Length: 285
Image (cartoon, rainbow, N blue to C red; front, side, top):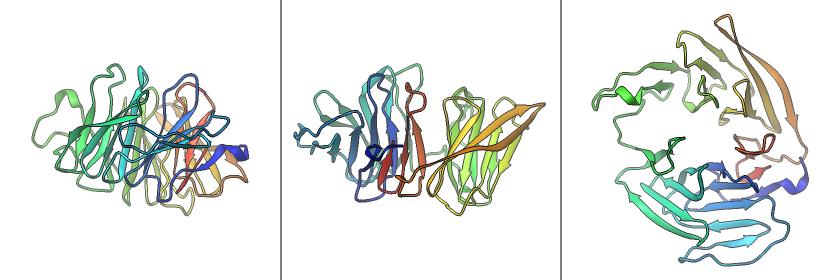
């Protein structure tokens, strides 16, 4: 890692992040309290400008800041087939759509409840799925990660396919790139890995460190899990053999330029080896 690949993007804690699906450049989007911040990591020199539509879009060394939300940004998403349409939601129930060319935001939905989840189908850029704070589809136990089959769900009391239990509150749950595994992390410093093809196959690892806010992210394949640490990234190798999931601490990436504990790693969808690591207020590329 080089010194120029670290940026402080916020004065408050970064709550959401995404590497935009752009094949020709590396752009990191981060969400904080009311603000969306974009870091064009390939920009060579600052270019002062102002965004349209009443939003603040000042570029300082490739960093653009906007204020489209009234609350804390919870999720940022952009579809690979339409990467210049960027959606974001907040705990104030807002879903905003950004037109990148015009630097204009539009509120496309306002819910009476906080919005904490937002995603798009891999094969359809026109559909947007979001979860409201009062939704029927939720886990009442914070120590569990639950799976449902959306194709056969009932409106009331939907039947869970599988419940992955933790001793403490679940921090995250992510499917592997092929969808074969689910990795969940919790505040007890544990990572649980479940085979989606056979729910009876699972593995749990614990005691990765004293930190309590990390979220395990999959790499570019189903065999590598990335965990942010105090000064770097721990890579865990995942292997399925003879109906057993095994994990080993494969390697560790550290840098003197990482000055904050890393909470989440976001992979560049097109550039293998490029990833953005989120600290409390900084992003390390």
